[in-house]
Length: 414
Image (tube, rainbow, N blue to C red; front, side, top):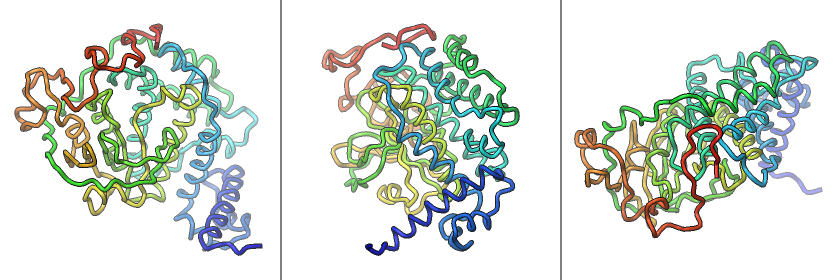
């Protein structure tokens, strides 16, 4: 039998620890679980456990993330997506609610099934990161509700309401298993699509964001990255926008996606953190879990167009020119023909780069001072390098699906 390499041995040890940890957490719950017992279950030393995981919280998050990855990888996509936003919310809710524990489940096993974080995130950075992740989850759900149309704030808020409903039901079921009828909850989610008017205006700070800096820099695009939404290997050399966000700035992805050219930009979100062992695993858990549900509800062509890459080693910010990235990082570039043509860093960087080169309703480009930017009237139109809007430009691809924007949950999606 061939001798295992060091990397293979480490991977086998990690897998053995995860199996033992899952058994320990299912039997005793997170609070009463012990690293020593996990080591005994895996027939390893305590040191071997700590050589792979920094502590109990990191190990618990790894167990949950591993389960979410398996569920995502085995998700069977439907042939067609639901026909309306309301039907889509109902279908998504039914899939998501499959995790609710039964009355006879043990507390520890029920927590694992729910992927519960109760009592786990007891630090301010972890709680703040979770809040950012909830907003990013809504940003992933929203485009699937209204595919082939520009992102609307209203749709993002509807997605947030739906996720709030589902997580609230999970929190109740965690302490009172068997409560909350999943079918009633799914119908409630479906009716959210018909809720009254929601403010659809852009964030008020965007007019004051400084414009991106023009550039003509060679772009050595990192290769071999994984898009967590589609599961495919990707590079970052396509024309479009690359936004690097720390885990405490993930909600800023909405600004970039709203400002991007709907039919011309590949938008990639690169998630970075100074704490990959815990905050990085938390981000992987939440995004992987949501993507697994999306894959079971929406046809592959109607999955979110936002690509998500986890970069624990900082390869992408280093390629952009940032020596180190942390939880607060916010930088972005626009790529065209193998060159970085615009750069921005700090609050609103994704919006500034996505908006770079547009021609607005007043005839001026987006590349003016922040003071001038605050006075323009909006209504951006794509520049000559952007893909045409198929609703107004005869050059557009006539085969692209067309439909009017739905006004309520009963409106058709196609």
